[in-house]
Image (cartoon, helix red, strand yellow):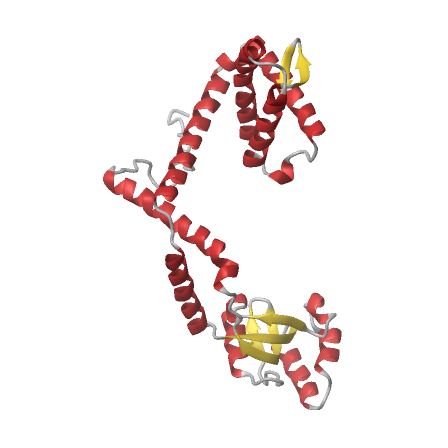
Length: 293
């Protein structure tokens, strides 16, 4: 947020010269219409529009005021702070110059990556191929999803006793409500809902694949959380979202890979040698004892 505020100040600074020029060369109409003045200097409709666009891009719409009146008040406050900062020489201070240089580098990085992606666009056919490859992988590893209920207890002995009660006809949901230490699902009769194997521990996932629909495990399944009695309420092929509904997510994922590949390419062209030893930043030198004492 500090960077956003500082960037906003820089953004505002440039407007003082623009406004001064506009006052002598353009009529006060349309986008040059003054909305407020500070010591005779105008804040125009165009300044407000540009500031609004700036806030939405760098701060996000959720952090921006919702009305032009609120934005104008914020812009006035910022201009007052900028003017006071210039008056007190803050723009000449080492702190300002250091942060300005860091922001300059960050902006260069962002624009360079944007330009790289713009010159290496991903066609829909490429996105579709990546989508289909990942779908095949998902279907191969996790072809089904399961509607599951479970009872979680602390010991194998307790689990065995509950399995005996289930085999004797005791309803699963009643035993879950009365005995499961997973109180969230226990209140719902042990229901976990629809899950895929990758969402649970390996032992739980393996057991799910062996239990038929409508049945529960005859052996308790151990995990890091305790001992589970697992019931499979239903099974179905894994739900695959249509390509069009996830195309932009696929694009973002592939663009992240593009960025990383671009950086790796730069590292090859410009050999990098890391001189900092592992954990060097956290090592501390033990104080030496004075041998004369």
